Image: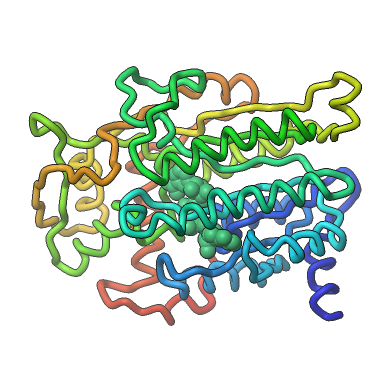
Length: 367
Ligand code: NAD
């Protein structure tokens, strides 16, 4: 069928030795950037995304249109559609899975817990089942989150620190993914890498995240809410620029060993199992980052300081990335000032000076 031909074409690599990657969540923020970077260096890429409306679908469609221009097909479908996944594995010769599709966001979980179970637990298992069934079995790299460290007060966070106190339902599902990942590695010999991302930001970012909504409110001359912790302390985040995260994802794929399968397990072999922090190592207080935004936007924010609601935000995050440096050559190199400059430039191109003009995206080539 035409659909099958499109999938196959999208999966074509420039030459043998390159990867063929199924990127789930390819119409998402991180997924669209990594897909583009993989394609650029000659890997085959097939995307999967259900284009859900957690945030404006127009933005996801626009990202997918950019990918289509680069020859990457984003299949529209849900992680829970196992028949679809089986078909993709059969068709496309997938060697690696980069699993980024998830229900993200901490506050949304308060009223929509089941969306997290659907995508982050049921969808996760559905995908891993099909990876287990696929011949050959792909190596899997998937997105966990810094949120698994919860309210841990020992900073910076290292991979072996405790993760048994998730502070939100989102964090609990990411922690559950790590436990599931361990089990699929242990029983079925799947090669598995968990990436704990720390507050990723940049062009084509997520409208539900603070840096994005602050920018919108500053442009629209609306107040912004800055959460304060106990004793008027401010939240601090280890903001990590998208290009650095993309490099970490690609290095993880490149260093992933093949899955060994149940057969390998029976022979007493162990499949690769890794966990990496991908952060920036430079936590910044929220008011500092608002200051940088004001400078780039050349406009003052109207600041409302309010007590932190008990909806799952943690007071601070800070990554120790020594392991990723040593094993992946990961080297986050974009400071917040530079990275927010890139974001603001994209934001103003996309939305214009405060007018929410979705159409202005047409023909815009940011990558
Ligand atoms: P995103 O929401 O932009 O991308 C996720 C994509 O997955 C979306 O396009 C969505 O439509 C798709 N999706 C969700 N559920 C699906 C399902 N059941 N089936 C098919 N597609 C589905 O988010 P992002 O910021 O690009 O995040 C990528 C990954 O990184 C997520 O797993 C997220 O939890 C994790 N993460 C992100 C950050 C960050 O700061 N951006 C931090 C920590 C972890």
